[in-house]
Image (cartoon, rainbow, N blue to C red; front, top):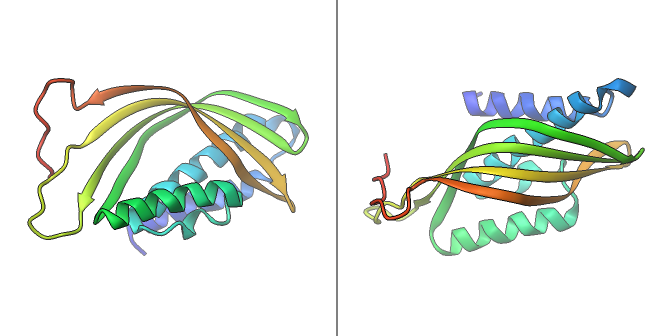
Amino acid sequence: MSRRGTLLAAALAAAAAAGSAGCGGDRREAEALARGYVAALAAAYRQSDPAPLAPLVGARHLRKVATLIDLKRTARLVLESEAESLEVTAVERPAPDRLVVRTRERWRYQDRPLDPGANPVPRHVVVLALEYAFVREGGAWRLDEAKALSSEVLEPKEGAPAAPAR
């Protein structure tokens, strides 16, 4: 198994195990859920296949990701993304079957052209404040909704030439 495959499997196992955390484990549970989702999301984009997300998200969110993947595929692109850091900033449990997690994440991403000889596209680095709402369905946690609260573009700098793909 590749290093990325091993990391994804570990993140998915952590997310699945999060459902068994004890009463005081909301923060640990929330972090495991967020990390599992983020790892699966990056894998789905990299593979141009929403399947890695299917066990972790509701149908509505899965359709949103599938739509973006389809748009990229039609444009002959693959979205390569990596969460470089993830910090849980707040956790709320508004109901026994609902967990709201706020994070601060640093992402690096790039649309990679599928066609040989295509012009490289710039890499982007952003810091996002995100809010995830997880719901318990059939004993498992699933992402119900994800929304961006704020974003800060670190790269490319406005007015600077785009860095070549490496």
